[in-house]
Figure 1 (spheres, one colour):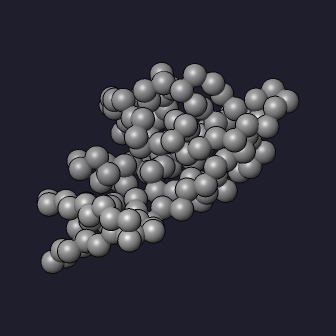
Figure 2 (cartoon, rainbow, N blue to C red):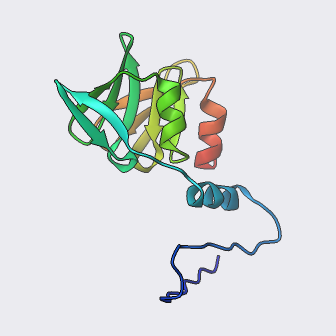
Length: 144
């Protein structure tokens, strides 16, 4: 794929044009990335309200009815439901089970699990299983 960047003071906002003969999965991922509307997420650390950027979030998981947001080294609580956070975070995130959402940029490794699932390990040490319901989309993302 050829990439060209034109830098000029006449451009006030970034603008991307893709020339292609068909929309492949790779092209669709680029379109999704360029059009992502990612906004900050508010979370709680003890009694403090914290503003998290999507790039700071590794995983979001529901544990004992509470939404927990995992960063590189910290855990945060959120009052929001998982689906609300998923809508706000954008296309760099994927749901891998009923209770877990991951940042695709921070995947470390994948191992076979039990009953046809996969064990996904994140770069911050967190891990969770990709359930069978979400496995086809996850494998498609990985190109398997």
